[in-house]
Image 1: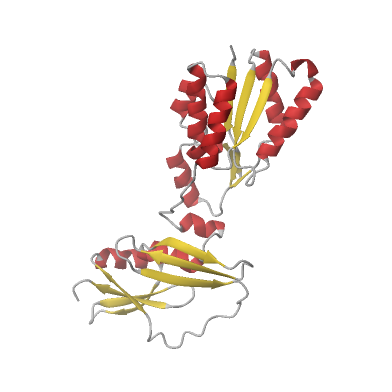
Image 2 (image 1 turned 180 degrees about the horizontal axis):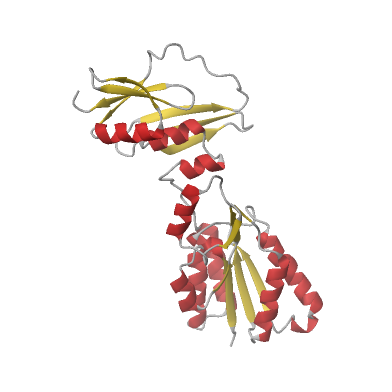
Length: 290
């Protein structure tokens, strides 16, 4: 009967309780934030990470998992008497980690040719991220406990990973702004007005990008255009032609915009004020009952 060891990386986002319950080894990606290096999935919880991310001046960086680390994993598995090792990796198109695992397997069998038939190393490309492949690893470990064969488990993994899809819907654009994935104007609209991207369109040559923002309640959409080659500022005229947003929480919005430093004009007699986006466009904020 096969004795199977399951390994994945921390990008699979397997909860600690689940990986401990099923005996899955998780290799943490090193993350550098400021001057400190952390082990992803071990040195902080997701909640702590997002709090740290808000305070960080720049988006943290991470390094790929190197061949030496995988070589150690293979040697340890052989010493512990496993007959098969299944490693499900982060998307190979987004990280060289998958390639490093393959390279380490070649080196492992070159250094230990006698182990080629005693320990079979199976490396599976998830083609995905987060729990979309973490779940598959957990299910694979459950199948092994039920006595399923390695071939059945690998077939399950390949089937799942070839059909799973990830839908990404950001609830906060501050992180995307730091990473450069959205324009400053789109991030401003998200933070100041609560609008979120609902769809995007990009030119094949990258010369422009359209971002459509919605409020998640009505069918309203605001289209923002980013032009790659434009360096000069837009001619905004006198901003007499502008957007206006009606809100039922006027005082709270006013306080938030004051804290953001984006209030550019106030008209207390009319009970309205204006904010200015990063490109200089004025947006009028109107209470629901004016």
